[in-house]
Amino acid sequence: MKNDDTSEIKDFKADIEAIANIGSVPMILEIICRTTGMGFAAIARVTEDRWIACAVKDKINFGLLPGGELEVLTTICNEIRQHHQPVIISNVALDKKYVDHHTPAKYAIQSYISFPIFLKNGAFFGTLCAIDPQPADLDAPEIAGLFGIYADLISSNMIAGDQLSDYKRELETERKAKEAQELFMAILGHDLLNPINAVGNAGQLLSRYSADENIKRIAKMLNNSAHRMKEMVENVMDFARKQLGERISIDSHSIDSIEDALIQVILETKMVATDVDITTEFDLPHAVNCDSRRICQLFSNLLSNAVKHGDRNHAVHIKVTSTPSMFSLAISNSGTKIPKEEIATLFEPFSRTKSGSKKRGLGLGLFIASEIAKAHDGTIQVFSTDEETSFVFNMPNDLSN
Image (cartoon, rainbow, N blue to C red; front, side, top):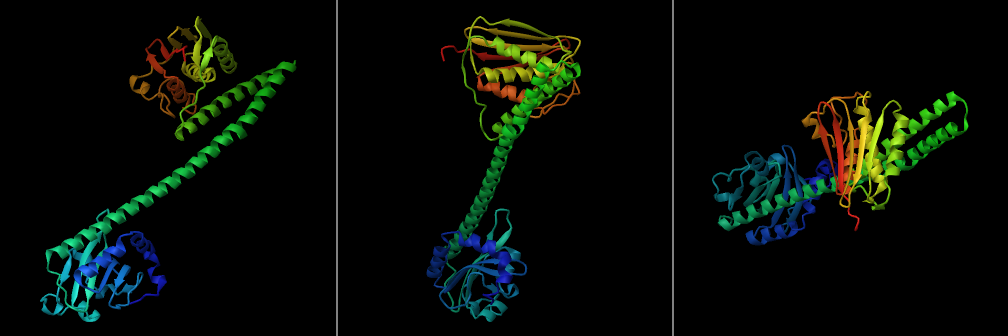
């Protein structure tokens, strides 16, 4: 027996702790000793080359403590590891199979009982066992039933402990991932948006106060780049919030004239796509109850998509209408028909059509647009033919709210 050689048992520390974390183990070992009349009970971790005591109840001064070790080849538990069957010996001297067995002789025992313990994947863990230098009445079926129940209980507790440990690890991983995402959002919202806004402001100032045409051209490029980068950052931030479990927030109120805000989006888009003709049809006799900033973001994403994938030889047409009960925004463009199977995945994050323009983006614009639509209790539908593709956003216009 080796009780103090911690270097040899350090690999089994987790197993010993797993058993120690089962609050019912001391009571189980106590009940086993009282029920059988045996003086020593233990839970052992048994492998091909090691026998380690994980928990012990010793009333006979056997001398083994938790973490203590027996030579595995001297144990019957090693045989149980191989055949996975319980072993019950009431009286070694009267047992034909074990009367000359080396284990009772080595450890001076006359009674022995041991049941296997298995892990959740069916792997053999070790044994629940008891020994005594005197014979014991172990032939009653209640004894075998008791050991079987306790072995299963220990196994179940270990499985639950493993699952709890896995769950804690997953929670910690999720916590760290959430912290990383929040830091990422903070960097996007401050460290990136601020210089992007500065670039855009510099472009506007240059365009306004410089008479040099080359400078104006460069200023226009700065404005276009800043606008595009800001749009991408806002989409990524909204996607990150969605991944954190947050729904896109909206601040709805009645807007008497949303047309002005939508026209501003069109002007910003034309600054980037100067060669695209955009026609409009506004019919907005009624106020619109919405978050105008978010609706403009939805509109910008849909319009950017139409400009990117549409045929530059044909105009992009915009139709916006309002009624006392409905607000509708439709964007239509000519271009390659979108197959039905692609329409089904258009609003998934990082989705890109296989057909149409080869221009690449993050693949978040339509996803963010659909989330904004959902936040307004609305929908975005796609209609695509060989002649025209339309994205239509509809939402209830509840002016009473």
